[in-house]
Structure formats: structure tokens, C-alpha cells
Image (cartoon, rainbow, N blue to C red; front, side):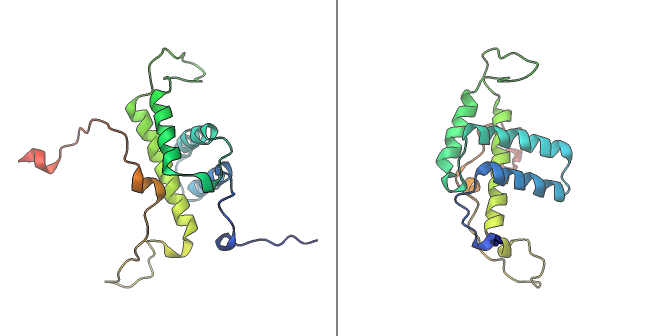
Length: 160
């Protein structure tokens, strides 16, 4: 019997495991020409999220789940499961938590673009002066600010 393939647009996506979507994301990153070290970092950080949420399907991905994960990261011991360094009781740095959140946001944006493939905001076939279509923002961009971190950049109001 021939198995009929279903197009991405017609597929029920809520039951797809996040681990499978993450592998598709890594393949997309490779084909876009991202550096191997960048993909390795994405794989490490996104892999930690997927390991934490176990067999969660796409339909269960929510802002609350991501916030719980960020709370877990903030409380996680530094060097947890590290092959060379022993954990000394300190917690993960704010910069490291921010890097994990940044990867989650990038993954969320990629998922958002995959669900609406014909509506890319950077489509080059619109004429000059055309209006970009309004799109809802990706899940984590809308509700997850990056964790607090001292901003060392000068802002215009600081220059007065």
C-alpha cells in the first residue's frame, strides 16, 4: 500500500514532538549557512530545553512552559553535568540564561515562520512603497523579555 504524504500546510502540527522540530531547525540553520559553532551552541541550549520538557509536543509549547524553564535555569547549578568542572553550588550566570532565552526566541520565530510559509515579512516580490502584511508576533517574542542584565550600552537619554 502506498503511503500518502501530507503537505506541511495541511499537516496537524500540534502533535509533532519538539525534538523532531528542533532537528528540522538545525537542518535549516545548516542550509542557511550558519557557522558550525553557532549550530553547536543552538543544539546545546535548545537540547537542554527539550531534555527538560521531555516529550512535549508543539501544541503544549506555551509562554508558561518557557517561564518555568527560565526559572529552572536561574536556579540551576553552575557547571551542572559538565564533563570537566565540578558544580560548586553557584547558580548559572544571567548572561548564560540570556543566551538560552535568545535561542528559544529564535526557535520560536522559526516555528512561527514555518506555520505561515507564504507570509514571510521579508518577501522581496512586493513593489516599492507597498505595505508589509501585519503578522502576529512569535510566541516568545510577545511575552518573554530577556532576563535582567546590566546594560552597559549608552542610551540617548544618558547623553544629555
